[in-house]
Amino acid sequence: MNSMISSPVRSTSVFPKNPVWKTILRRGVSTKELDAAKGDRERVVILGSGWAGFVLSRQLDKKRFQPVVVSPRPYFVFTPLLASTAVGTLEFRTTLESVRTRRAGVDFFQGWADDVNFDKKKVQIEDATVRRPLQLSGKAFHAASLEAADHAQRSKKRGQVFHLNYDKLVIAVGCYSQTFGIPGVKENAFFLKDVVDARKIRKRILECFETAALPTTSDKVRDQLLNFAIVGGGPTGVEFAAELFDLCHQDLRKIYPTLTPHIKITIYDVAPKILPMFDSSLAEYALNLFRRDGIQIKTEHHIQELRPGLPGSSNPNGDGGCFTLNTKEEGEIGVGMCVWSTGLMMNPFIQNALDDVHTYPTASAHLSNELSAPSAHKWSLKRHPKSGGLLVDDHFRVKLVPRSGSHLTAPEDSTLPEATMQDVFALGDVAVLEKAQLPATAQVANQEAKWLGKKLNKGEIQGQGEGFTFKNLGVMTYLGNMKAIMQAEGGTEVKGRMAWLIWRGAYLTQTVSWRNKLLIPFYWSINWIFGRDISRF
Image (cartoon, rainbow, N blue to C red):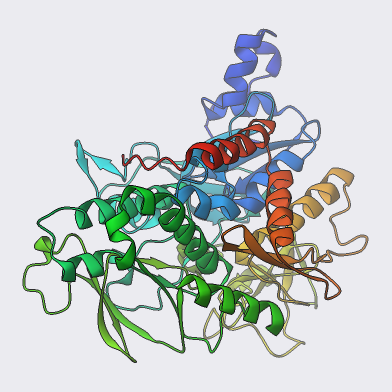
């Protein structure tokens, strides 16, 4: 393969075989060294460092493939434990795994994929190392989430652009939080998609309590400062509400005893019930447990706006950082914080950057029906009509269809020609299997990445063999006070303390590195003995 730089590819024999040079090559300090280290291996460029991208990069056989991860985030986040880090049950580092490690054998570029030329097998990348979205010129940069902060800064100044060749491309960029275009949500809500989001939530919770404890704070403002709203009745929203309840009633009530009567936690959802993925008996158990704990559940509520300041206030800066949550059913409500967890929105890279297939990839695309001169036609990626996700076959290969009308509409006529790219795959939240649409969960992305990695290692990806089959390992949700619910395949149901033990054990075993397998139970023990760390930084 030609180097992405105009100079010819150098042989790996140019570099001395010593640990220093091996370290330099592994870090991928330039594309020349990356090309030199490639040898006769195939380069697999993986876009994204989430569940699918990170797991696949570790799964690939390094003797056959050269994995190169491209992501603006140089780490993987173990998302099931993010809610625990947001309240201090665990430290932030316990959910992180660096893409770069000494033994991973994975190269990495910190950047955004801006465009893909499927014909030339080349990805255009904008570097993301110069932007510091959370700290600008020594002043805190306020944004609702890491995504919002980085996009805001990115719009001001673009990074340098370079190109990277690939033999195989895996698109696993993940999705963003869905805000449904509701005014003020993107700017003022707190999300829970990244460790940076968890840090912001933790800081805001403690900020609310410190402000409420001041003698200058009125009882009216105090009630609204300690009114915490969670929008979304799925597992993420429910688990965060449970973790927040534990923090408030196990630790903060001992430090702020006079503030306990003012604490209020409310879950809002537009659906008629919370936790719809569980059987009715388990969902009812969770509902009754929350009612006993004083957590309010308000279903069939529609959020219309979220803005800074308290209802009727003319000076938002003097309201302790509170917000006004406007609902269709109850009107305006003052809250100290609103955590938003209502589903996923397609990544802009999928929506915009991959909108156009510049040139039909003749060498790698296989047509389902005969078509004369396919390169003379304009093509687009085949997408799901509702979500806009990339439709893939049971081997996760991305498909092309002739461009006509809306590029978000999958063709209904089965005789319409379509092409399957043999070297481009999509995994995780952005991929939609044609035969069966799976939920956008970490469990699904993890299984997809492991399956694709094994198939690539065996060389069985060109449509041979049996396609991917999802094995449902069950769903679990923590409900607070050492109680949980679990629903396994076959209808097995577990609830209460036993489900909580299974919940903790399952996530501990799924943790990637031995470092975190040791740190997580260590912090669980430390916080059980001494209480959660409530330092605000």
